[in-house]
Length: 495
Image (cartoon, rainbow, N blue to C red; front, side, top):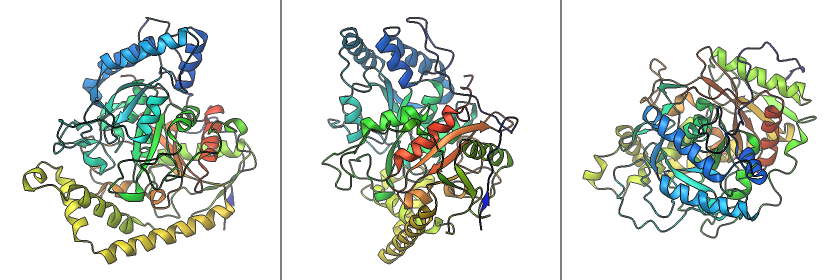
């Protein structure tokens, strides 16, 4: 049975959001009042009112000012970034930009290879000596489109959990309250975007790892359909692992997807060329779309009241924009046991080559789940695959009735930094408080997190939009409709 959610005026609802900032500093004036989107930067470059050098200096100044409090970066290469920005500025002066992102500052999660420097993956077991001569496919595409690389952002060790702290770099903190976590595992990238340290961040998502920190840090993130963005080297977490953008809004994410999607011969499971730009049809709105709203997965998830109120306000705005919204739940129970079997087995495979001395350097929590993963049998793994296949079948049938599914991204807002799970929650593992995210890594569906408000403490709340496989453009379109209506995006942090 479904309940129709009537279009309403959402003014006055809890946690009403404000639109994201897009103000741009005049050349040489330093940090702007709010971070500028990549789209706004490119328009300013085109108009000649701003130089890539100014934008890069602004991003570097923000990093210098906030890094001691937030710890979002493993490495910043200011000299190289400014050199890239100067080359870009010369191209723009000639009227010859060389790519879709020419001169736009970006960051890369320290899981993905970037030639010219080490990729530590948050681990003290990785040697800096290299050689580091190859870009991951998505990094190579950013380079081809002349993005300016600011640095590598933090990750938990091998990206294993939903918060960002590691023995290598310590804890990455929340831009809205440095006592709290940024989320993870792409926490450094989400924090960087929130702070204006580059409008675009490249992250990975194996169980929510771009969506979780996006929700905690008040930015946008998309986990694309599996294989839409090529991945190399192959992840030990197998086909759970996705590559996705974290940005200030959905339009920037569509632009970034145009760059990082496509073919790469090194990834045998990639989906191949993209038929059209992800920006095509972005402004078409949601009128007539069939949207299912599942606030608690049928009572399976306890959701903080402030989160529930902000997400419901976002859902009501979708209805007001003409979507046909019904309260309905996907037909599945929590697949956490199957996810643990696949995820912990992958973690065990990551550390399998390490000897006893190297294993002693690992995050104790990672060491624990690796031990559990090593005890699973091949039959256990295949049973988890069976659960995954059945979940995918159920979601496929669900999307015969609905174009999109909307849920909270997370049932809570950010909690104390340095912990895998909130104190007093009763959860030992990060999956206990992320029940809305990892199911869609199992099914490989596109899923986005959209900031739709804050709780009473001013901490961001995320709304998740999920589409059927290959409907990435539709997910982006619905998210963009919320931004265009002023129902997405929150005020930037005060740090």
